[in-house]
Image 1 (cartoon, one colour):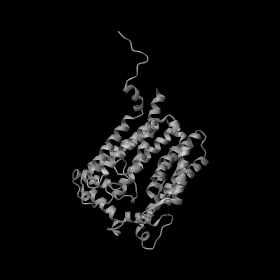
Image 2 (image 1 turned 90 degrees about the vertical axis):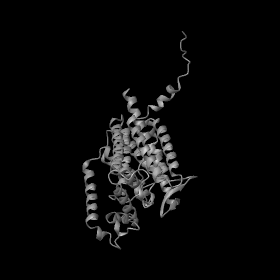
Image 3 (image 1 turned 45 degrees about the horizontal axis):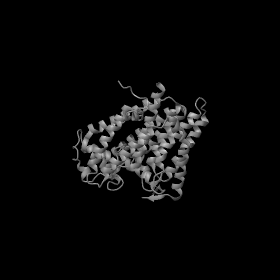
Image 4 (image 1 turned 90 degrees about the horizontal axis):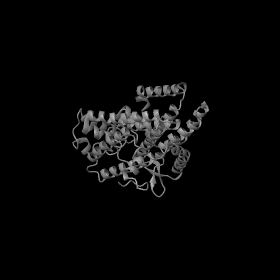
Length: 386
């Protein structure tokens, strides 16, 4: 009987199987479910909207490729990219402020051969940078270290707010603050700003009529941001203008009832009453066709994804990995919560897409990058245990 030669080439499966070990099964399953929901919803909403369904599928494949590649990069190498990526992101934001492209009154884009939105980079660069910062100071954290971390977060957040881009700024702040919180920030420093925020919300809610009167201007906020908050309090102030988005979103979701009108049967959607039905307001179209049950299923999928990401964070072998995985979990939570909240009329309307459901290439790739980071951290945990 012939014996196998030591020089026999390994099978194709043996060669590619090490690459596939970077994929966390539960996380991949949640992504698969979101991908299916996204394709079904996009087919319905974009049925008469050019080639958006095909583009959406292509964006998903691109995000999946990015996730696959990043999953093969060990967290140690990701840590080495933290400072260069942060510096590059801030430099691009400064370039946007100086000679960026202006559309609809906002300067958010930069032409570097192709048009890019540098603020998207900071959604990942900020958690990487802050996780690197706290890893370098593990075991000897002082109050000044948290103050420095706040400064690292404040610089890009301020540049993004100046564009102005409230939605992206909120996501960047949520990602950065989650890292600072998970690093061990004292509750004594957390409670005061939370109380101030709650008081501010209470004042706006109870004295909204006076604060939103003509001629009243709020400090810090841009006019359009003030208008969005006032519109949230009472969309009927301008039902055919600024309140149109919220009103139509609530009508669509409410008309879906418990079980929904059925796939491709949404009247608000297909009669084009829902604005931005393939992007920011796609949840309204989804809610109309799949109802309360469909909405609860989608919320359950997002909850499972976020909880799995937090489990990966808890089991990560290093402080850097734990902070980074926790921040990515909060990014997904913030995306889903803010989008569903604004479409349902409980949060102001901001430009935040629904992860893997809304149309949009840049956000899709950014989310794929985040999932790749989670996969990489999950893989490093298994390697340490073995």
